[in-house]
Length: 438
Image: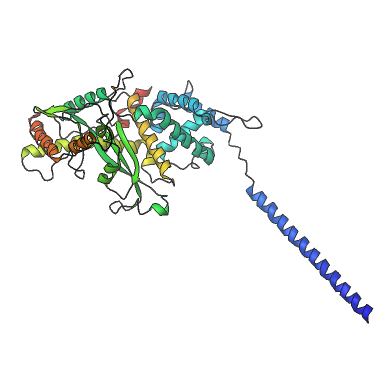
């Protein structure tokens, strides 16, 4: 009996071992099959996009001797003249290695600098997603995203110091003379206002900061200063959309050079009264500072009514600049699809810089940069010191604000050559015809 029972126990142990081995084999096969399927799914599919053919087509369309589309169509589609675009491509290629044409491991050439810059400019001009133009430019979404990212960085780094510069003494003199002759406001510098840009993909954490009731959706704010030629002289971006223009102004560095004494002289006279600082035209929400001129609310009398119309027409310069900016760069007109504030700032500043470059290239700028102008050195003022506080008090002086506005009531009433009805076109694109680009 003992030998029989021991053989049964051995048989049971053997059967159990066989079952365990079979179970291990089944588990191993399942794991291997899943790994193979997962590896197969992760394999990137190669798409032969014929990027060389796409580059040849771009060259034939816009850059060959006998081009398919003349310069008028290039400016209409890419918002600038072809000569300016070619200079930008040259500078961008020299400053960033990403835009240089490279070859892969088997010697196939990559995208040319021309293709990468054109895709970046095309996305800014039309506000389209990176994968929406694969059929046109034969470019993947990743390359399209990287092209716009590096293009914005190089434009800001290389062109920002010149095309978003602070005005020099010569610039201030030219601006004041131009505004006095065109608008009838002596001493006027520029117009100040804020622009809201819808932010579609704002992170949920920031929804409270970027939502304001009067807009009904998430927005980011740009504070900008523009002159009559729609040149953007100052840009402060991007502020939360829940705050108003006064809060943006309090955060902005627009008056820092006045506070520390490094600003050029902008003094002027109205009706024999000297004033120390040039001024900006603003709307009714802004505070009564010595550097602001606001229109009257419900004016009485013909003098104040004429001054109000003249101020509102001149202040429309910045509104026209915002309109031209959105028409030229549709990416600012459509809700932003980016997740980070830094990316919004890159896009905004790039559009502003290119906007100013186009104005200069087309010869419509009031103040051309004088490379030989020497900026005098100034002794910096200690922040928080007595002189610093006195300058802030002067700039925020309400009495000076009212005196200046009252002087303008009399001055504007006596000026006969102010056209209060005719406004310049909103978009300079329609000032050109096909014959201008042949």
